Image (cartoon, rainbow, N blue to C red; front, side):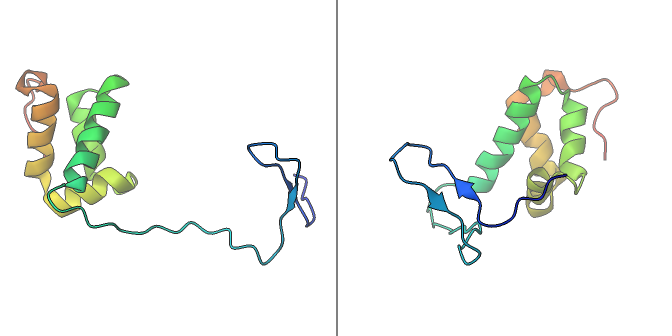
Length: 108
């Protein structure tokens, strides 16, 4: 592995003719700000997106439901802990339809 000494040369996305040299004091850290959105359930929207995306890549219902229970999947697991297994099951039914249930039924 090659370690590059400071300063690194950063190239801008748009070529303005200028080059920015990274400095050790540059604040390269992610910052998130919560914005109140009355009437919008962001947690439910995020959960629905997880179900839809994993269904589109071919995951079956049981595998999607299992993903919500595994702490390694941070987003889905946050939904599971916040809303509970009944919410996740009903959301999967809503997105995939109850016909997507396997003959084994629900898993706990």
